Amino acid sequence: MPALVLLGAQWGDEGKGKATDLLGGSVDYVVRYQGGNNAGHTVVVGDQKYALHLLPSGILSPTCVPVIGNGVVVDPSVLLSELSGLNERGVDTSKLLISGNAHIITPYNVTVDKVTERFLGKRKIGTTGRGIGPTYADKINRVGIRVQDLYDESILTQKVEAALDVKNQVLTKLYNRRAIAVDQVVEELLGYAEQIKPYVADTVLVLNQALEENKVVLFEGGQGTLLDIDHGTYPFVTSSNPTAGGACTGAGVGPTKISRVIGILKAYTTRVGAGPFPTELFDEDGEALRRIGGERGVTTGRDRRCGWFDAVIARYATRVNGLTDFFLTKLDVLTGWEQIPVCVAYEIDGKRVEELPYSQTDFHHAKPVYETLPGWSEDITKAKSFADLPKNAQNYVKALEEMSGAPISAIGVGPGRDETIEINSFL
Ligand code: GDP
Ligand code: IMO
Ligand code: MG
Image (tube, rainbow, N blue to C red; front, side, top):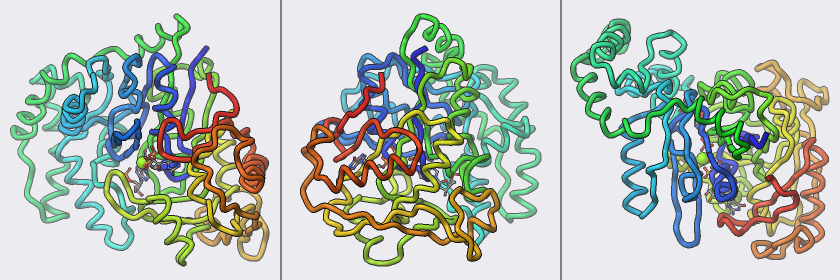
């Protein structure tokens, strides 16, 4: 049962794109199962850099079939521009499959995302403004538009009407905005239909048949564990389930099929948008992590908030995802620090706490308890094996592994495909 899930163990941007691309050449299918173009996955191949938002990172591997599962929300204009951008760079995208059950991010969902954030003022979530939350809300409210609806004009019109009936009331009466015309939305969506049609498929059937034939399927998560709507730092989360269970619902594959769950874990911590972040740094160390790590959002261009590694979060990710392995990324960014603090527990209202508190109030009060590990100054970007790493870098990795509760099976020492130390094979 060669089905693997690869997901973010922190607040996103751990390096999922690179890790997926690395495995892409050895797997038959790469499947996005949740989220949408709020993701920004960077893949560096030789001197070429790609930023993928909606498409699975496996699209860059010629032998791999990229799949957009039913749990993803699809903005058709973004889909088509991402495809044409890749085609212009010589990437063959013809194998792409898109679930007919995936929901469409409509123009009014994007509008609602933006006006809601503005309305919230200083209480805003800091969303990516891509319409993700409102589209999932429509899905749950049963007024969503699905990819398959693009192929029945009458159904599409009825569904857009139903959705806009309520939304236009809210837009005009609460937010003081202009109403959105049903015809205009229907016309725009129908304009995408024919271009998308060749990719639309029964992806649940395709993936289950592939697994029966012992094909290798990799599920690529967007966002990360702490941004999960159920298990993350609610309400400062995204509106889907990046955690491992999301791969089952978001692709239509049973949990018995999944053999391995790989958590992508940055050697320090970052976060974009609002919400609690116990190890966040506001000093020159935070500035240095941002500068050296290139911590700027791929989707929105916002500076990422930076802090030291948080082992409480890593342990939590191991638990809620049933992680079998970690892929530790960006170890090279820590080169040059004499001492590296690592958060091993929290202090909450005077008490030491070893595990992530379920209470939002407690988490907001959590202060990091640090242990300091000795750093290294040698360049590690050329290291090919664990033994090539300086002793203190080895010890840092071993300490993180012990605290986090799952083996570290690969280490990233640079953004390129080959800048990776493989310890245990994933396949
Ligand atoms: P994702 O959203 O999880 O795919 O991650 P992003 O692409 O948003 O951010 C990760 C950034 O780190 C990208 O710029 C990657 O090219 C880069 N990256 C990934 N792995 C490594 C690594 O091991 N070392 C360094 N220096 N950069 C890395
Ligand atoms: P990748 O896949 C980091 C954050 C946003 C905001 C919150 C909700 O590249 O790791 P949304 O637009 O999803 O409703 O915003 O989630 N967020 C991400 N942060 N990496 C991402 O994706 C993110 N996708 C959403 O900043 O705080
Ligand atoms: Mg990203």
